[in-house]
Length: 287
Ligand SMILES: [Zn+2]
Ligand SMILES: [Zn+2]
Image (cartoon, rainbow, N blue to C red; front, side, top):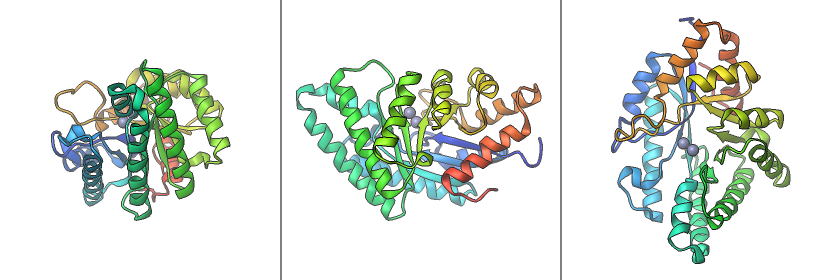
């Protein structure tokens, strides 16, 4: 392995209650020259907590502690707290005619997240957005209202935001490009996460930032089709009961090295997506 090649995970979750937790993950990730992780909160039930405002606050405390441990283990980290759109859908589905309660709840949670950003305890908002699967129209529009509110907060605080969206190709990218213009957001702060190949191509042509899952079939496509101005993610959920759902952070490194050894990508390209983009977007110092 080349001495200068180091690797970033642009979007990952850890669960110190039921899974490996960042202490173990960081050690293994560092063994494959991992240097940076963007850590994102999991919905409270993943940690055995209630889906109440109190439960959310406790889940953010867990996240903040995981970020502290990551730094202790020698990783650079940015820290994101949010309300997953699948949770919004679940809440709206329980009582679709009273969705104002869900909006109110999300507002309270977002205000708390904003306070955590202002206090310097976390760095940004995420994940937030729209369901990636077919959901009731009420769920979709509720998610959209909450997404817009989160984007306004991100703009006012000048903080980054991770978006979880449907993978609709052009319309997905265009809706976010339009929101950025309408709300006058900084383009460098809005990251579409877990985008598929088609959506990534449209996102890149509209000048948006995004992360792609570090799976082999996806990487071999995007390395051919995209300029190196995006990031790679594991979207690891650290749930021992669902091991195949996402990649381990070290697997996304193995996949990049495999494609490098096959001549499908250059060291320079990998350096740009694993270091240059990360340092520019998150303002962290390179390794
Ligand atoms: Zn997501
Ligand atoms: Zn995620």
